[in-house]
Length: 284
Ligand code: N1C
Image 1 (cartoon, protein in one colour):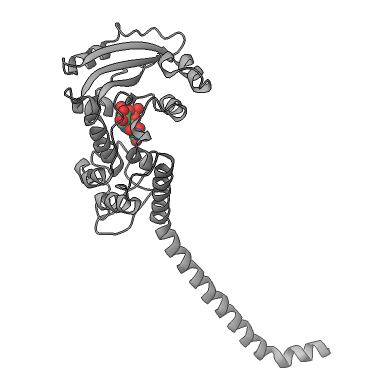
Image 2: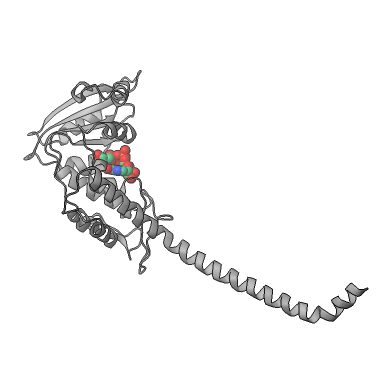
C-alpha cells in the first residue's frame, strides 16, 4: 500500500527521468553510430597506408635502406595513380610516377620470372637470395597480394568492392602489375630465368603477364640468356622439347638471346627450400 502510494506520488517525476534517460541513450547511440561510420569509412585507406608504409620500412631495414627511397613519397606517388578515378579507368601508365619514385639496382644474373608457379617460386626465393623475383624488389614487395581502388571524383581509397583482375582491362591492380612487370623485364640483365608450370597444358600462355608483357620487354642489349625451369611433378609427361607453347616462347625471343630449358622436379625445389646447405647451383 505504502509502496503504491509512493509510486503514485512520484510517477510523473519517474516518467520525466525515464524520458531523459532514453533521450541520453538515443543521443549516445547516434554519436556512436556516426563515429563508427566515419571510422569504418576511412579504415580501408588508413590500414592500406599503414600496411604499405610498414612494408616499405621493413624492406628498407632488411635490405639496406637507400637514401633515395622515401616511403611517404612512394605512398603519395602510389595514390595519385588511382585516387579520384573509376575502378575500371586506371591505365598501366598511371603508375609511371610510382615506378620512378622507387630506386633499385637490377639484380643482374639473379632475376627470376614466373608464370603459374607463384607459390613455389616465392617459397624458394624466401629462403634463397640467389634469385630475385619482382615481389622480392621493393616495388613488388609493397603491393604483393593487396587490392586497392578509388572512385570517380572521390578522395577515398577502397580495399574491398574493387573491380577484379578480369572484370575490366584497366583495373588498378592489373594495371599496376602490368607496368611493374614491364619495368622489371626491361631491366633484366645477364642470365635470366623463368619458372614455368610443367603440369598445365600451356606453360607459356599468351594471356599471362609473362608472355604478354615481360617477354616483349626483354632487352637483348643488356640480357644474355633465358633459361626456362619447367617445374614438373612425378608422373608429368611434358618435356622441354615436346611442349608446343615453349616453341612459341623460343620464337618470340630475340635471336641474340641464348635460350635453354631444364626440367626441374618439384621435389628437388622442395629439397632446396628445406635444405639451405645445398648450393643454389645444385638445385637445377
Ligand atoms: O600472368 P603471369 O602469372 O604470367 O604473371 C607473372 C609474371 C611474373 O614474372 C611477375 O614478374 O608477372 C609478374 N607478376 C607479379 O609479379 C605478380 N605478383 C602478384 C604478375 N602478377 C603478379 N601477381 C598476381 O599473380 C597478380 O595479381 C595475378 O593475379 C597473378 C598472375 O599470376 P600468373 O597468371 O601465374
